[in-house]
Image 1 (tube, rainbow, N blue to C red):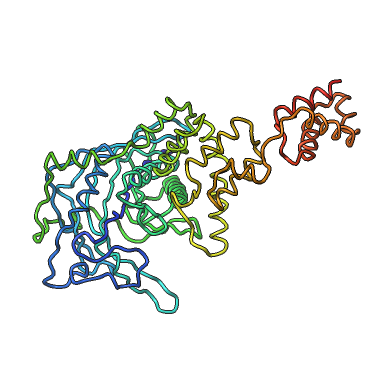
Image 2: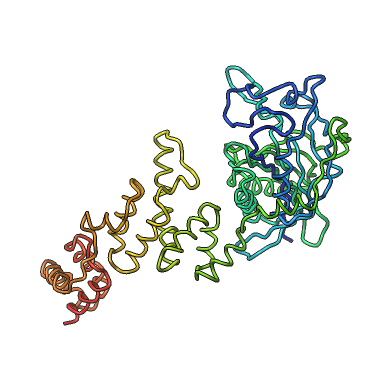
Length: 485
């Protein structure tokens, strides 16, 4: 009988507030170590926390976007544990009365659509960071202490690494859509713990292990597969799987034991005596709900219904809010929204990826988000119209698009200035066909002997004579007619 994996994810998301959750220290990433600290976030005696109201706003918005029930009243508790990056020896979190419970989201995989439950979302403060250096040993950077987090605790509904990654991608997309976090995994703004057990379908769940602080989709996928293989091998060898926290090693591709996994009782939760309950009125909730933009699922459905996009195209274009809004603006100015979608998925995405790779190779900062697409929606729509009308072909269209990435100019004016408009004059096209056939008699003979595939090669020869400016549809028609004579 085959083994089935059972996965529940705990997703930690840093909120993009300017100051920390219980003090006025900045949350800026990348500052000099231990420069954004104060007696409150360092837990010095006598320092009292003051709750940042913006954190409540962001957590509430996240709860609504993830279909949760948001409580009118929630409170803070102390989670006690001892670790070098936690100077207070406790973390302020929410255990007994979290702000959100009972949510869900849907993911799309090769197996189809699946609904995954969310147990709760609670607010808490982040811990510091340990920096391991071969020369100086382990050092502590406390800048991250007190940065506001929400922890999204998922139900154990996930049954594959593919579903886990799809779930994380969906959470990342939703939270960036509503702008409560930048979710930059490379900076630790989004990271997750994977709880995994295995069992035979129909039998009780097995003993779970937890893999901590995975901060890339690839790491999540690899860690899940490695831990699944380890547990299968252990049980089939008659060994016991113990409840513990494990670390995934990127270099070896294996998981190793860190410590025995605690239960909630081990943290000795109790209400924080220095913080009051926080409350939301019906008016507060309504105001926050009204700020939520149209989210991914609704946009995808609208794009398929209103613009005729395929499911794949709709999914690609709605992956980022800025991209969806860019597409909508360009589609409104274009003759056919589908042409905008095709150009975005093809040449535009390719140029963005190439520029990012070049920046990384040469040590320059990688541009992300809207800044990665330096072409205005209106000019992209104009280029789409030139392509749709046949005034430029795909080859010259690529040249124009590359120019727009360097200097966002009017594509029609650029095509006119550089002589890039398509040649559709039958006389010029017929002369080019005749020249191509006369210069390649062997290919013509091969075609006449019953090998029609050579026609594509002759089309390339003819297009080269026209310097890539010919109307491809008309040129192909005239070439075929000449070959059939």
